[in-house]
Image (cartoon, rainbow over all chains, first blue to last red; front, side, top):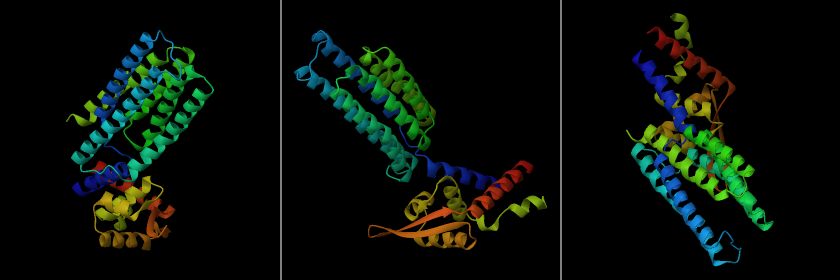
Length: 199
Length: 98
């Protein structure tokens, strides 16, 4: 009888392990949120100093781009480092077929959204950039969630809703950005951290 | 009891074969290295258990080349899926009775 129970547990474990990447770190979500909030405050400060008037050629605009790039870089680097740590603890690897599938399915909406945002800059639809990046990031999370922890799906859905609301209230891009990328990441990251990591 | 035991499939009565089938049930296909890593087994061990499942017509083995590298892909057949589902059902019923 013991054996049968063990068999069922083995089957379930193998099904989960082979189809989902479960070493994704919740703490890295919290950190990404913190970076996003800090970045938003910095950009807000730049906007106030410039009386909300920033041209594409200005030094301030380049500074904003640099802050955005730094937030992205730090988030990805932290996510990689913390996920590596969690994977090692679990006796898992970071580069395997499930993590590759996770990355590919995340990147398809992300790259689409990124290119779309660049095209929006070209056609001077600046107000739409914040909502669009939120919506595509949310879609990327939902799409990737099939291959990792279920919570990523709810994070994605929440960010999609925030993106749609931001499309209605154009002009508050930065605030919605801080809410979506900052507050949501910290919230869902903490939930994931307390659910799976702090044991 | 006898009825249930009929559906306990001897072909799956081994940790590695059980593992191969579990993985192939939830993935369209899996290649040799992925299976090896997930199951934590040696090349020879995996190959022989995979052969046994192929002999039962429960999985298909596809050999191909990706560039110059040989690549072996495994996938569950329709028969394999049916047999494995019956096996799991039987296991569950046995546990409930016990």
